[in-house]
Length: 122
Image (cartoon, rainbow, N blue to C red; front, side, top):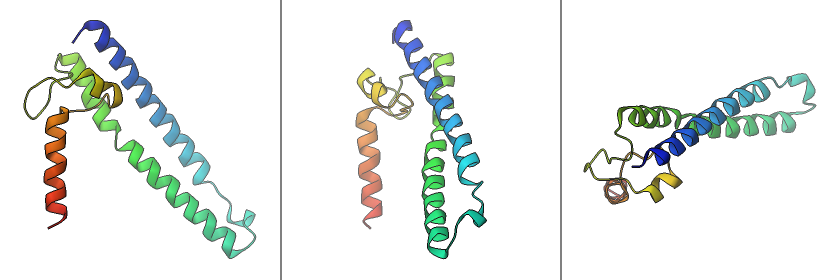
């Protein structure tokens, strides 16, 4: 992969990491600081709790990406970025454009998903 491409992906990964961390901090500050006295009845309280639960769940999913971003950044530094962890082949730039922290090429990822689907339906 070209040095210019590596720098571009590094910048994207760092920006995505920063966005996730900032978003997580805002969610925690906003969602966890609801005063129950501001909610006049049980329905408002239930709605608030449901909203909080969904927001925190989405936040958890987003934060689960952080270790993948860190790993991708380490691979860039080690000169291993864009190499499939399964077959050792190249992960296409088009795949990395969509998912810059991808660790598998599209062929290996499809195989992984087929295997997961097969076990899930058993």
